[in-house]
Amino acid sequence: MYPDYHKVYKESQNYDEIHLHTLSGSCHFVVNLVEQYPDLKAKISSAVFDSPCHIQGIPAALKHLKGVPEGITRPLISTVFRGAITTSDTFVREALLPGVPTGVIYSDRDKVAPVTMIEQMLESWAEGDAPASVLRMKTNSEHLLTMRDQPEDYEKFVESVMAMAKKPAPKTEDEAEGVAIPLVA
Image 1 (cartoon, one colour):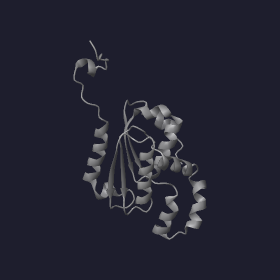
Image 2: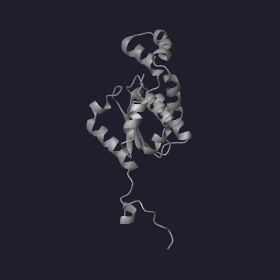
Image 3: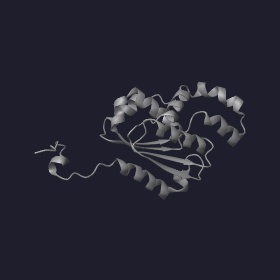
Image 4: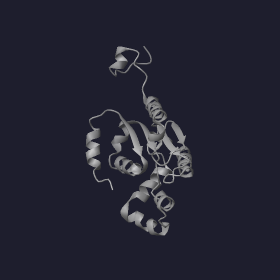
């Protein structure tokens, strides 16, 4: 589905700090990326997941949106979205980025990433090795349409998550240069 993990990893080497902003099923790509390149996690300073979905939400969504019977689409998932069931299970079961400030945008009207699934995912994350803090933005938009429906709120939300990752401004020149300051004289 997303073949060029190395290209993304190589590009990431140009940055000291990365804000991860993931839409819908792209969480599958991110799970695979950080499994293949675990050192990348250290660069991720904050993350926003907009309408993260479990691949098993697709048959229900297609039934609701287009009337396609789930019995037709469910068997195709493991073929068309190879490996996505495993990454979906991993993503919803445990926090991908423990200790990293994280924002999750989800909606009451989302048929692909239903609110109950998102809330269960957040509960699972809280039970395990959770992100440093999780901000939630619950809306009334359809799948991935919060940015279109509420652009100002969306931008403020993303900025809030990113601000949680900001380090305090250095107090002295030594701190600004990254020099260790002893606690005792």
